[in-house]
Length: 108
Image (cartoon, rainbow, N blue to C red):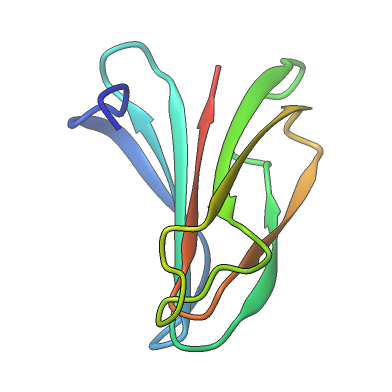
């Protein structure tokens, strides 16, 4: 969390259904780094998150902080996994969210 900027150049709403879920990408002022965050309501869901906000022709290392398979906001809210993937603007990441859960991604 200490690596996340507090001032933003821009924000892009990637996916949303009011009252159900939201996924937002934000670009930090400090060095132009992108961050994505998503949250869901009381329904477990999988979202396909497009990476088309990233600069075309560049490769990024995505660090993904996501709900673990056994995560649940009521019974195990702190179960999470951290994975790294190489991505480009052409990719789409499939992210599983626990009921009442969410995820965060940082790009370098």
